[in-house]
Length: 104
Image 1: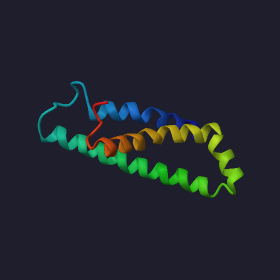
Image 2: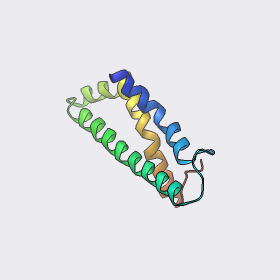
Image 3: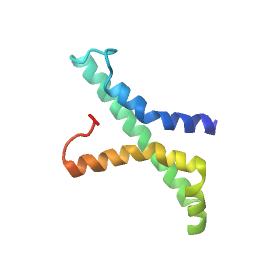
Image 4: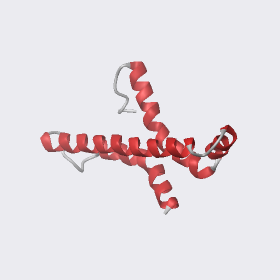
């Protein structure tokens, strides 16, 4: 179960880009396409928030600083961090530049 969730988290960023910028699956114009993209984007925010909260709670209950370091360098937790980190890097870049970086 953990391996399946970890694999899903690793695949999330490319899948999100595909869903938010579909080639020709959804028409690029029209209310339906805009609504579908917004719903996917909002769902992405919710899932990232849940996964981030889960990661932070697991980090905080892991114990003292030595245990936190051990927690952070374990492979499954590194995979979780790498899965959620692109979202926050994207937010940081967008806040710094002042524009959307979705085209990247």
